[in-house]
Image (cartoon, rainbow, N blue to C red; front, top):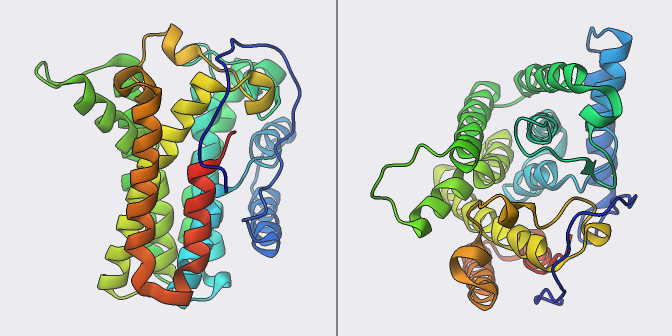
Length: 307
């Protein structure tokens, strides 16, 4: 698999590019995730225009990485995928909520998401705010329906959602201790803003399978390493890919003066860091043997993705 990301920086251009699913994702898992997401939306008591907005935000594409991690970790822990589907749906709803609100003019002010107009561009700011609120509430309703370990799953989701919001505050509004270095600020932002939900996905999958503490710890460490790597790759994509290829605006973090891995470390150091994290993540799950093979494929995919 190609692990380097090569390209030239580009600014935002209007484009329409629908997200496609990488081969490393299990197609039956993806179908089950889509079905469970649609089920929860269909059974929510929404006004028709709110339902349309939630469907636009939640059912309109995306890699489904976080719910895939839930199911993959449940499977690695020897659990039933059916037991993990509500948790998988819940984490994707929180992710969708975060994207809808992040795209708003008061935050990142983006016009493009997954190759389509962002929700506030398509349906207005008021509906985008309310649809994001609805997605967040529906996420906890879905998590509470988990047939196994529901209380711990809801608690994990609550903590991770708070951490994600804290990361967004740091990224957008600051609030760091005065003596914190740029490297430490960067790590704090991304451990919360991006890493928290990815780690939570792994933990919820393990909890839905009733994993023992040692295995839960292993999967947590694997998720932590992948979470850092995911954001490093995301920052590299923002610096090296076009908006047409990435399916979203690029170059805006640098323009806004935000901290990213390439800005703090440079492109080559960022690539080296991605490879280090990939190697450590694979070593973490090596003791799992065949049960960890699908997790290893996901790590390789995350290290080499270009969108």
